Length: 189
Image (cartoon, rainbow, N blue to C red; front, side):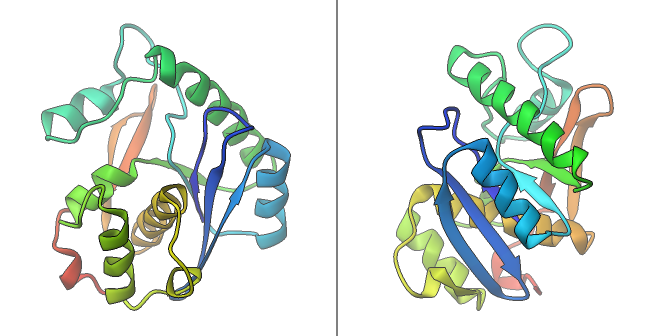
């Protein structure tokens, strides 16, 4: 499952449920709705697009420092616009973990960069997913960018289960999971 978490519950959160090559996407709002959806669908792994922790000191966690060094543009969790998102993500992550589900932190733009996909051209990204032979909601209608980021997060989770990712960061502050670099055309899902 991929979750593109909004900073506020009144804003849409993208959700993508990946089963084989069938991907169902939708928008949810409250933490309760999201947690209920997790409990109903029992995903093996949940990839959350949001910082799950704050740095121990300073502006950046070890993960952000390394991501920036590698050329991935990622926002610090302590920026004013990110603090609310990071707090919500941390709380939701704890609720999910209490129910026994495993989560990883992901960054969809970095996933797309690692896979040489379009970064922000939403129709092209959706077309790329179709070229990967993914089906479901994305083959029926144009997805919102929240849903596209959620599908990208779910793709990262899928690749993580196949040992095709790397975890950047450390145990104390957390990890960001991104795919090992390759061209998406060479992916075997």
